[in-house]
Every structure is written in structure tokens, then in C-alpha cells.
Amino acid sequence: MAVLVSGGAGYIGSHMVLELLDRGESVVVLDNLSTGFWWAVPKEAVFVEGDIGDQDLVARVIAQHGITEIAHFAARIVVPESVSDPLGYYLNNTVKTRSLLESAVRGGVKRIIFSSTAAVYGEPAISPVPEEIDLHPINPYGRSKLMSEWMLADAARAHGLSFIILRYFNVAGADPKGRSGQSSPNATHLIKVAGQAALGQRPGLEVFGTDYPTPDGTCIRDYIHVTDLARAHLAALDHLRSGGGSLTLNCGYGRGYSVDEVVRVVKQVSGVDFPVTYSGRRPGDPASLIARADRIRSELGWTPEHDDLEEIVRQALDWESKLKTRNAV
Image (tube, rainbow, N blue to C red):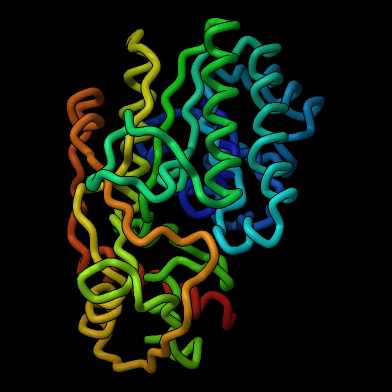
């Protein structure tokens, strides 16, 4: 018996791998290394370099390793990029997810945890956003993920799968033990980019949009620590293993911070007053996304342990410093 983690060499997937290994699970990572890193996969996990769309490969992995569950993280996630390359996003996030689901069904896998996104909500009329609100994604990234949610639900009804869909809000921070973090040098996550600016790896930070209908005019997001998110996946896995029903749940803390507020905290924690410039809005960015986060607590018994923006920023900065040293070697 083993858990297959697709995208397990990437940011969030690697933290899930760590949490699974920490409690003695057998883990197989499948990653094509398009955005992940081989060194992010601990030696205790089995690593298979390959694509989730390669059905022959996935079939072999499921059979050889006795895969009982799949935690599916592999995806492209950059909203502006999805606007300029929608077909690439539908291929990677939707078509290949369909291939993975077919491989799972054929291989007898019965439990799947799917990495979805708050982008499925679009510009919600309610804040914080409940799971049952009508879904109107405003960019190809959100649409590609929503299509995958539909496919998973339909496949579950037809083939007896059980699943949990976790809709992430803004993931940030790094493993508190310093074992993993956001490692892509070209990542667009705000805290990552601000940290690079604070460490002198960028000339400064560009803020997109100052005229949103928010108190300071910049976008508001609900930031969740990556370790809390990984542990939400563990709770989801336990729920399914105990016979619990399929669920769709928000992953967030239920409160938001504006871009300007986050920048102030990064400057405060780092002690560096890095340059900030302001530009127009980016395509596909909603003004505010805050989770209504009570359902995941009641359904899974999940309790966050790192709900503190300064802690999130500090650990992200620590990882960025460690990564800078690693890349210099």
C-alpha cells in the first residue's frame, strides 16, 4: 500500500510528501520536473520522473507500488500565464487530469484528493466565500480546475471513487523544519517575490493594481501556511480511509490581507525597505478572495497551527536565504 503524490517535487506537493513520511506512510512521487526539483523529494520516497498524462507509466506505477490513494497536485498555476496560454492550461490541468483519473479507475484506486483553487469562485459576491456559492471563474486557470472538479465528481459517481476536493486560497510560507519551501526562481507568489526583493535577488517589487474596491486599493487574499495545508490533506486522507464521504472544502484561514499589508510585514520582518513600484491590474485577478473556512474544521477536525502572517513571512524568508546559499554552491 502506498500513496501516489503527483507533483510531489513541487512546492505544495513536497510538503505533503514530508507530512506523509513523518507519520510512516509509503510514498511514491510522480513528477515531470517542469517546475519541481528532484532534490525536493526525500530519499525515503520513491521518485518516478514522468508525466501524469502518460497512462502506460501511471498504470505501471499503480500496479508496481500497490497505490491505494492519489494526492493530485501536478498543475500549472499562474493566472496571467493562463490568460496568455489557455490551451496549455487546459492541456496540463484538465486533459492530463482526465488521463490520471482514467488510469486510477483502471488500476483500482478508490480514493483521490484533488488540489483545486479559490480561482473557481471568480469574483464572488459573498465574502468570506462559502463552498456552495455559484462558481464563475474569470480566468482559464480557474476554469481548468473547475472542469477537473466536474470530471472527478462524475467519475466518482460512475466508478465508486471517493474524493476530497480542496480549494486552496493563497499558499505561502515554508516547512518549519527548513526542509522545503517555494523553490522556483520565477514564482509569482507575492510573499516569495517580496522575499527575493528583501534579499536583493530582485531590484524591487511590482504591485499590480491600486484601484480595486478594497480599503487600500490593492488586492486582498487569504494566506494559508503550506504546512497547515499539507496537514489538511492528511486529514482528508484519514477521512476517506475511515469511510467518510466525498467532500469539497475551502482551505484558508477566513481572513485576508491586502498586498500593501503583506509588503509592510515583509519589510518589517526582513528589516529591509526594498523598492516598490505600482502598475495597472493584471488580467484575471479578482479584487478579494477570503475563505469561509468553518466546514473543513467541522468535517475533517482540521486545526491550523501556523495562522500568523509574521510567522509565514519569517519562514518564507528563512527558506529563501537557504535556497540562495544552495544555488550559490
